[in-house]
Length: 284
DNA sequence: ACTACGTCCTGCTTGC
DNA sequence: TGCAAGCAGGACGTAG
Image (cartoon, rainbow, N blue to C red; front, side):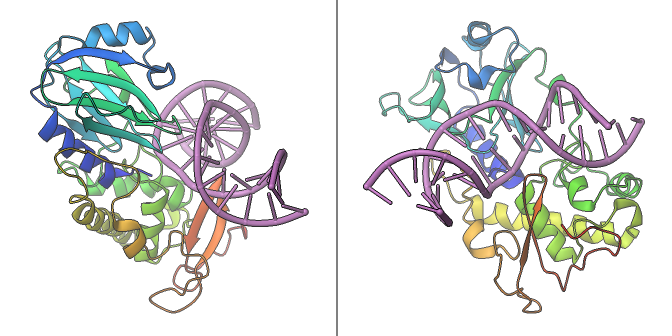
């Protein structure tokens, strides 16, 4: 599941392999990925065709490619989206949804099995697409404001895990890194933001940065010149996870088995000893 | 204004 | 063996 580190790996791949190219043709092979482009697939293709790609940008889990028209191709990988750079002759992937032919030896392909991802042209969005103006800066952004984050967290009645997943408060954090960061900070996800000490917020933010930087260090080597891959496979998952997916495994700090609970139609993993439930929370 | 939940998708895994 | 249910989950719309 692509979270910030995986998306950043993709951004770097796009920066090296498609920036500077001109799009010579666009094939939208399925309507689903352009569902957020209100004017439809044909309009999407028309706005991109003939345009030169000037950059590869990211905020949180969103990517965008500024075009020489002043517009931008805005994309989100969802759960399973991939940006692949392939020779034009390579066989189509099973879940190939959009093809961008370029004026170079490779073409850019958007492939997405579960189709939660999407692409749209953001009108005038080269600098920062208006569609993602509500998305907060991410914790690796040099302009991320730690104090503002702390203030906002400590005004919220929601649990800290829910807050970490709120992309308008902090972007780029998904279910996996939220659990890992909370484990590092020794905080239970149900702890209400407004009941956290400033030092708790500092700890969890440090935890978020630590897991992301660690994943980025490992994931950054997982693609080569031909294949800009992302599928939730940063190489980080199998080796370094302390909480997520570790149900029944001993906590590496204290040995207590990691517990899994249902949360927002998904799962949360935590150490019940290191991360005790807040007294007032229901036993979910 | 703020919070919480259901929905969209497909394919792999699990269980009867 | 075969089929159905369960699970994975980011972001958004809507209900409360």
